[in-house]
Length: 297
Image (cartoon, rainbow, N blue to C red; front, top):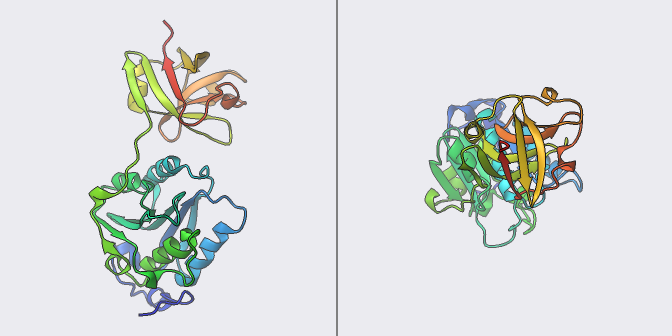
């Protein structure tokens, strides 16, 4: 069976008789395909993904989760995809943070309940699969009939991952697009350091710095509870021999303008922020830097 890009899957979607391959959501007349990449918006890369998806599955809702992952930061991409799981509708979800494109790394599709994740075997997808209830099926995408014709070795997002994802939404099953593999053999990343060193002392990594200058740490709510801090309590942040004083709070406005606050952010992580300012200007640390947060002694 030869698969051309333009027009495939239209009759199945319009007729309401799409095959149910991994959940009843595939009978939705407008199934969901999401995209998370490190492409940015220059050079037309994101637009190319949309064009390919719509040419194969024109009724699909294509949603951009994020295209601002720092270039090649697979771990942050995996974290953001994992955190999105609780909001993802049933459908196919593509992740492309792929510094190994063109190498021997494997292209994958994974099923976890009613969610399917498509992307490289470099750890990007696995945490999301776990968060969705566990990976039940995994296939290596090795059937080029489902790829875009004239595949380039440097753009698997356009030529492999999105075409396969769109076909999975319209006219293909996991068994058709690849060869089964053992989920236990997939590449797994190490989690960021986050631990209670002693009572009232947390050691964590800088995970990301957002556009507002908030510095997110890897410590979650459970570790934050180990600090034993209450709103308004002073805390000390130490890194690379330097020290910064902040207040534990629940919102930016819990401190005065220009003052530092440590709070649990919308991802459930401890974060250093400045009310009306940028915390990264105070905490001169980069992602993966180790930081200690403690009650003053």
